[in-house]
Image 1 (tube, rainbow, N blue to C red):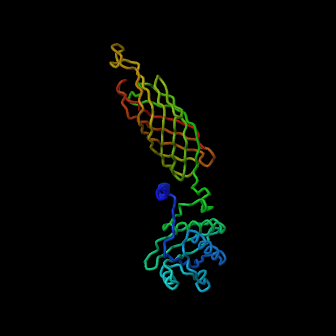
Image 2 (image 1 turned 30 degrees about the horizontal axis):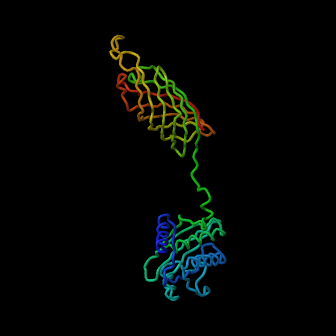
Image 3 (image 1 turned 120 degrees about the horizontal axis):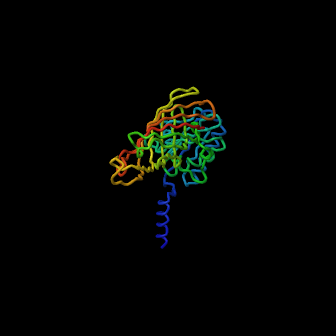
Amino acid sequence: MYRLQVSGLVVCMALLGVPSVHAEPGVRTLVLPFRSLGVNDTTLAVARDLLIGDMQSHGMSIVSVDGENLAHGALACDAPECAAALARESNATQVVYGSLSRLSTKVIARLSVLRVGEPAPFYRDQITATTEEDLDAVMRRIAEGIAAGKPNSNQASVESVTQAETTAPARRATRTGFGLRAGFLFPTGNGFGGADRLTNIHGAYRYEFGRTQIESSTLVGLSWGDGNLDWTLLDLTAARLFGTRDIATYVGAGIGVHTITVERRLPFNGSGTGPYGPSTQTETVPTLDLAAGLVALRTYDFNAILEPRFHLVFSNFDEVGGDGANGVMLTFGTSP
């Protein structure tokens, strides 16, 4: 029964991704002083001592050496050749070496572990401490990775989350906001049942970064008139901006999904007499838009936009004449 319980625990740990670390018998690890790039000797010594303590807490055997007899600071060993030679002199089976580099207030730890007799390290990792105080969590994370036998910069435990990971990552700024536009859709090719025009109003989220703008509309676009209806379920348009001054033009294209109702009130034979077919047809169809436009007041905290676009619908609406629901849309409005 006990063996079954232990086996079940191991299986559960494997399935849940819980690390089960056991020190390999006969493995003796030498931890060399870290090479310094702008980090003072006290920080180097404390970081090395923290790493040794965390490795020992994972059951790893650490070779005891007199650190005063090893090169320190900028002259410390940071290469596999000298690390392997020092490990052999200390009768260690593997060696930890690397560097701590300062970049403003950040300290970047780059460590490797090499097995004696192997040409390349089996472990390499780089982790950034936001401050020197954060080196405690960084050394604990590195010890966890060495014990597991693989880098785990992205696999923190509850005790080794670094301060940098609690800070939102920097992103390039974009100009974004929600704006409203209104205008008209003029059917082409006798589309929309021969209607003269449809009134349009829609809202769009606009994202501008560099010379590119992206617009998305979800459930907030509607064209209507003469019994016809074009409801935007989703539109996504990308465009290229030309110019960086207060007024700029753009050209782009977009795809979408619309629910469209087309109504034709005349009989199909066009004579005013004879049998009438179905007067309406409703379809949910994909769409393609080709857009060009003008953006004004770009240096202010809102923009004025004038945009013509060709609206192509991938359905003929055969039940009401087969003339489709294509058109040219002209809208204007504002956007942040």
